[in-house]
Length: 322
Image (cartoon, rainbow, N blue to C red):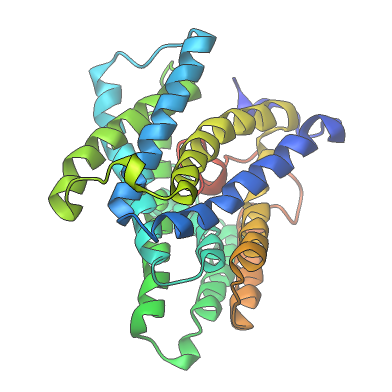
């Protein structure tokens, strides 16, 4: 699939339902994380959800008669991508949501493209820094400061939780350009690479989680709502969402599909407010709007449309926070 050459203008009815569904699934993921960490250690929650997602994608691979990568070099690079694109950020979001509202975690997830860009320019050399992108980064950074409410002072568990969510987005900032530089050019399908990545992340978490958090609890000892949240995070937020995202890219084009970045925090805020009764301070949604404006400027969404690489919040290898 050559996503970047797919026409961006498709019949609205052919891609809009999938586009909205993807925003709902990934936006709701922060609610499921909040429910899950009420009974599970964040490492255990991440282990269960990643294992569920891996099984889901393996089933899809079998149905489509696709296969996992066979080159040792690809698997070696997937160790890095799995750690920074799955295991670490998922766990950090879990720790973060022990301290902050799920809707706020959804807002921090939207900062991912702003973190990806400077790392891609300065470290991995996969992108070029233009004046437009620099302005977008500046706006985005200002939005981050507004979300944090730095004028109120720093410290406390709530501030620490926000930094953990920001750290999760920073992990995506490493994983995405690394994947673009070392893996994206391989001959394997995105489905194959994502399934392999989740398998590697499951192995990593299976080794680390017992050492840090003890043996994972048996699923039968968890409440029904936590079990349902884990299944939703894994099967929907990783498996089904990946398939939907690929279809959106194929039908609507990468540029249009990437704008789901703006929809995810909207659903995260709505779901958090309606289901959990969460509330935010005035500066958090205002800062979120500034962040999204910065993302839009950096990605050229406000000017002439160009084919764009899919940002972190839309990439199947990083199931949205998610």
